[in-house]
Image (cartoon, rainbow, N blue to C red; front, side, top):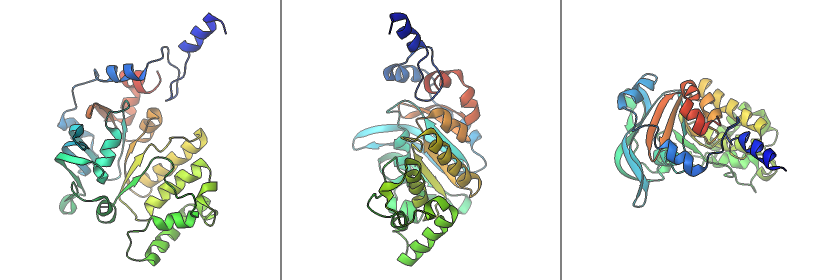
Amino acid sequence: MSKTDKENQKRSATGYHGGSVDTVISVEDVIAQAEQLGDGVPLDDIRALCDGEPFVQIDGLRAGYGKMEILHDFNLQVGAGQSLCLIGPNGAGKSTILHSIFGFTQIYDGTISVGIGDKRRDVTGLPSNNKLKDAGIAYILQDKSVFPDMTVEENLWMGGYLMESTADARASAERVFEKYDRLAARRKKLARILSGGERRLLEISRALVMNPDVLLVDEPSIGLEPRFIDMVFEILDDLQHGEGKTIIMVEQNAKKGLEFADLGYVLVSGQTAIAGRGDDLLENPEVGRLFLGG
């Protein structure tokens, strides 16, 4: 390849979020430039984006791992049945938000609450099992969280491990099978033989066995072919608009995540640099330059 060809290839390089970019930006440059996006989002602006009374609310959260604080005075408000996509450079604190909601981090200050009106409850200090069983919060992990040597059916039963009886778990699993014929047809197959898209469907479906109100979704598109990515987002769309689930997701494919979500937060160094409607962030030139591939 000639020097000219190499230069042209670099100018037309495709970012991992899709779309062509004129210049390849290193991860370090993305982080450095992202830090210039803003000094934080006023709480009134966060409130204005929420559809009605917040169903999931985070106030002044400082959280991290051990003595390392990752989130600094972080605020979040999402209405019942709304969806929020968290984007930003690596290390910005996106997954730490999901971890904090579900009880995987050290909370130094602030509160996390779920529910509306007199049913709102402070869940900040609840262990993860209680977050799922009592507060209706389910966490859908990144790829490879299925049990490969169990059948599809057994994987679903595991989703109901906190239920009062095995019979309850199996009955709930049957309701999931009724919703997803693709899984029902493979119920006796080992999970290891499923395609990437089918494994992701199983991961999502296993979280539904407990019938949660809130879904925390970590990188739903990671490792999937484009046709399966579309399938997964169609499933999430149905869960939001068909069943009224509130969805908070982290998605490296920022374009896909913002196209899906009602709201978007751009995280930088443990704080929200930009917050807006998903469609508005897609049109934001700085967001586009740094995270959307052009």
